Length: 631
Image (cartoon, rainbow, N blue to C red; front, side, top):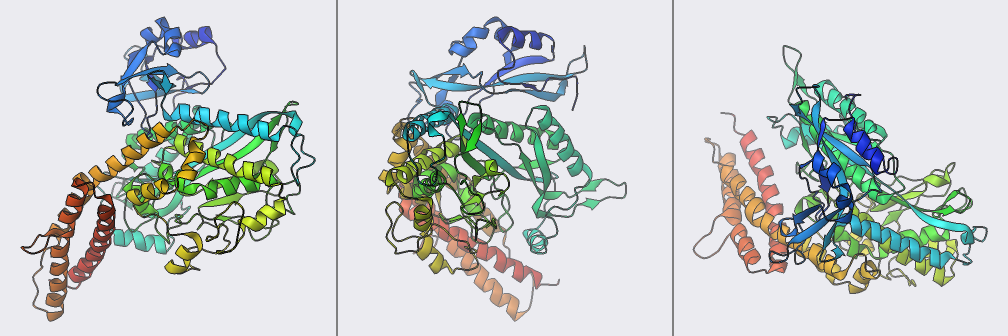
């Protein structure tokens, strides 16, 4: 980190003249980029000379300075080829960050050339369509509706709360970021990585060499941008790196995590996460390390999550902030009446939220039982209010500190680093509002709501569904068989198409998202069309060819042993079943491609699961076969 450089222009700290004066003091900032976020979570990046920005400053905030081609990013069925113009409107309510190019250094002062990244909103035909505006408008809608509900309200268990003194609603939001780093040429086996994980050799171990240097530099750069990193540490995945005769580290393959302070502005929280990913990539690249934010970069080894924390508080007219989720007596109750409504709304409507959280095949590769990635719509509160629990097998857990009520919040464990945080958080607060409305209108006490949340499958409930359980303090993976788990919590979707299909089968829950018009039906339809399009084409162009290439790589080895011959015969049959057409029967890969091309997505989804299951089984079988041949 270079202390002479400007890394952040904090929101509200400078007016127009102050910003222009500050930029004039930093001639190394040569470009401006307006950062809009499409529905897939991709950020725009363009290089506008700083002189144009300084000259036409007002136009950047009026949407007159910059346009983009909306048909080239993810706004399917909205910004089309014949109607593609999207106007970009700079946002002055959040921090602006500076991105430096260390490979492009100015001769006159030796400083790297910088680009001022200004978050923006995107307008198409007079309507905001981008992920940032959806989050902003959703939170404004929730705040407005919640204040109406609470004005003059009498809430059981919250009789002493000064609802009439509420000035505003505060949304406490934050994310954690997990990722894998490796040297570009490193090709460690899944077997070695899996063994290391089972032996718990990596979690919170000491970082060494260029990994340690990159992590320390990343923390310094994020702190310079105001993110205030709380911790950077090793995660469960990885193996110990090696050292050559000159003391240089090579064959790096490790999983890491970064955590930073939450924000009371959800837009800022999501922007911070985007900035963190950019900084991580660049800093680790400078240190010779490749970064992967994929949910499951290595099948069979721990995937990377992006646990998302959400909470809600009331800002009073006297300036005091009170957590709306926390009960009056933290040692006697888990949550307030509003807190129970908050989690019940999220769980009850999660089928509508799920596609926004898990929208890719990679996301579902991570959501498998046994890897601490949740597959069931269920929460954990703790065994008793006095003893908080961290049940890591559930979808959304209560985080609480008896000595600090302001810390009460919920952690959604399903997101991954490529989840669109803007849309995910929008859905969480919109569905939470639905549950809060039920809790308030029902007139139930916190104890009544706890009883409903803790119901067994088959027990009647006024809001939650009869046939399912929504709270579990046991290990959802180890203490239930697959059949018991599905019976208790519902069978979870296993592919993108199953996720979309489940959402469409619950129009009443989708209506909860669209009720305020901030996440419109048109946006929902566009998002669903885009993730189905990606699912289909990723299967055709990447996943199926990858399986076919792997199958072709399983060659017969020289041997004269009967057991080896028998094993090869079994492998050969499985290779044909997966990837070779016969006169009277087509292989799984061919049938899957044909189903996708016909838009027969029900069949394609089933064949995808069959293909992946048999491909993984074949890989394991071939490994056993190859290891038994000694020549």
